[in-house]
Amino acid sequence: MKDAIVIIPTYNEIENIEAIIKAVFSQNKEFHILVVDDNSPDLTALKVKELQKDFQDKLFLLQRKTKTGLGSAYIDAFKWCLEKEYEYIFEMDADFSHNPEDLIKLYNACHLEKADVAIGSRYIQGVNVVNWPMSRILLSYFASKYVRFITRMKIEDTTAGFVCYNRKVLEAINLDKIEFIGYAFQIEMKFKAYLKKFNIVEVPVIFTDRKKGKSKMSGSIISEAIFGVIKMKIKSFFN
Ligand SMILES: Nc1nc2c(ncn2[C@@H]2O[C@H](COP(=O)(O)OP(=O)(O)OP(=O)(O)O)[C@@H](O)[C@H]2O)c(=O)[nH]1
Ligand SMILES: [Mg+2]
Image 1 (cartoon, rainbow, N blue to C red):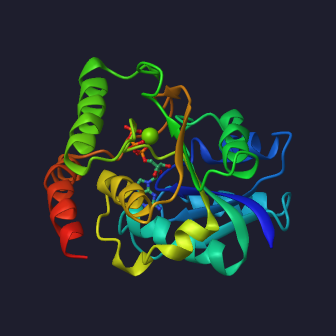
Image 2 (image 1 turned 180 degrees about the horizontal axis):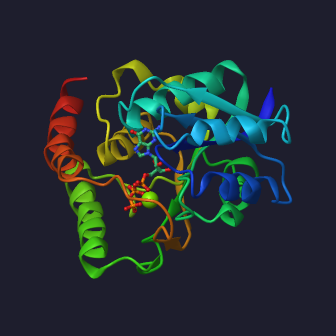
């Protein structure tokens, strides 16, 4: 069994990719990285291939032909990591919103404190978001409250994208049945883990808005989440 791998999904992250990879590899603890790129027109994947020469056997690249959404990119990446026998599988954005120095905190929560899922949480101690416009903070904060209300999960940051999973959680969830592609994907993963009674903990982190590159947030992602959460809850009564 291999130890820990960080999945970094990318779509047009040429301005961030080299720096984020180097930041992860400069941590005291060794993490491997799997970049999952959706054929970014800015050639993010080519940059990763160049860097692979310097980081052999620990930097990996999964190239997909088209942009079919964050959720499906993660599903493909999870399957890859399970097959390669990693024990701790992380989700992290490429845009430095998630601080690579916090990886170790999530790792310790799972490895030392035996959590099954550790969430890098923005809302466990107040609202730890830097440089987001107020509208975005309110959207995210109330989205989290809304999801908590509908699903009854005891999680403050249900949409968080900075997560460490013990592999057994990903093995227990039927990855082919994950339906959502945008933000709702993050909610659905947590909800499935919650329904299976895994031990989910939240670790406080500070989230910083991206400084470089463009956000892929959109209206359709938001509406998917609003209606999707209700649908997901109703479906859970029948399973
Ligand atoms: N492979 C892949 N990666 C994606 C896709 N959409 C977004 N990403 C990546 O997922 C991560 C999060 O996307 P962001 O654009 O930062 O979206 P966000 O963090 O929800 O929104 P912001 O806070 O506005 O940045 C980044 O590393 C993106 O490059 C996609 O369709 N496919
Ligand atoms: Mg982002």
